[in-house]
Image (cartoon, rainbow, N blue to C red):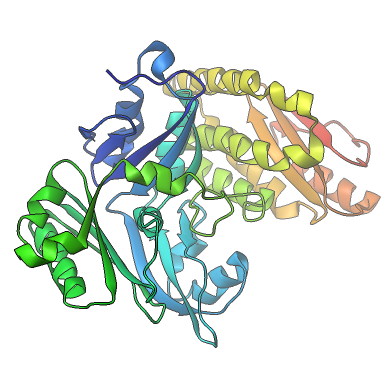
Length: 414
């Protein structure tokens, strides 16, 4: 019987249309990705539900490609690659990359990006609403990269992950190239065997096989007997230990961090979703608050405030549930929120960092702080522009110029 004391951090693998949960051996199918959170939440009873989740995220909609690139920061990399990969400019889609390697330009990385929205919404938002905060999300290939405990002297290795009708091959060559290959359905087994046989034909390559269910043993049985001892067969649960040491600032991390998730971009996401789906806006508002809370705590909050975070998250979850009920009842939430959020994002001064937005049907609270010296004129222009644009939601007249952390409350005026 699997047990998980409340507040425990748990690792789960989402691969294709199934979950693998740390501490269990059998997969849990969920069908379409929008149902993944619902199915995972249903696996826990009472105190079994973990408070935090490390997620290994490998749906069919997550692409991986080896690409030449400049050796630079994330934002510059996005700009350099966005013409080739337009999805990098879509704030609804998650993306990350392996550390950039190379001695001379051009350098190289493995780029991971969603081809359709699924991680932020609905998965992370729905899990958060259900009481589980996703603390990190990693591509399966990134986790496989950390499966070997001892790298060969040559630097060449291959790690093949295999499940029923699913294969992912991660290669690291002796000259530092990294490649990811995926296959599903009838091609999965052939892809795995092809990768294993090619690696076994070389004497300088370490070979690892991560097996979900009995897929690993079935593949090993199809290899020539003399080659089998070179294949290190490990269970999928090894992935939980492999990603545990990874810092959330690792570039392959698919969830936003403080350095990459600006308030301006967060509001653009919220506004875009509000225009098309009210329920998406409300879930995204909760998600923005969760994502920013931990990142800005060191600057704007004391340790005692952090101890109150759990209670705040529970309040947010209850508020989100109430807002969803209102939307289902037919209240026009998207028409109310979208223009106001768009105006807020468009006019926000560069010296202002918004850290959290919470909303009810009668009140919106905006939390933030300063990243530089803010002028009275820039502050007035922003608050006035938002008040004019939002015919329903309005800040107080002439709110005082902040000198540090601040909170503004916009109320509904009819």
